[in-house]
Length: 232
Image (cartoon, one colour):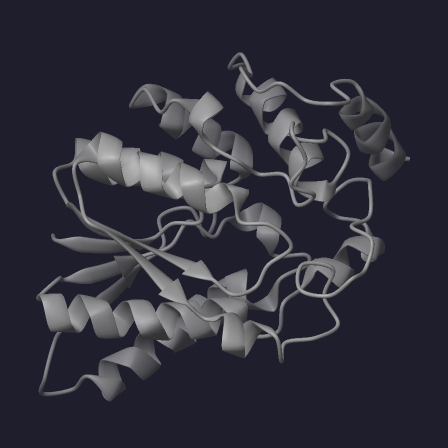
């Protein structure tokens, strides 16, 4: 199955790229510049495409992103520290982001003759992001089949939607994903901060999966405090 993958350059999407490549189904990567706080991750997406020998399409959505206000990823708002499942993390929601990106990816897949569009949304995203939940992905697949009816047959591939980030780490390790060549941190500093929701979730996932984490964090120990606070 020839698959277009929406790839941010983060751990989840790069791991899925390597899984799809291992299965012989990866056709291309599609990434988006929507005016996010930093574009460090796009360099890692480009490196992934080069490593796997597939085309990399970078779509300029900055004119759209500038109107998607109110998020710490697109506005001058502080990115909160802590666990992903804290209420404060909802400030990182970019309205309709996945729906917008997937719509563009479907158009590319249909134009290029691919059979599927893949995205690495997973169970850990469900608390914060409505466009990562199964209700959304199921409805979106139905909508896109109607949108392309009679023109192309493209399905939505979401293999991690009911699985955890630890599962993704395990799958990525199985296919030798170079985890040090992925970027998760929302803050975009010289090092991944180790304190924002994505860094904490990333570090916790490696621990739960029993896989060594090669990532260098500015604060490598904060994640334990964040996890304990969430449990309490």
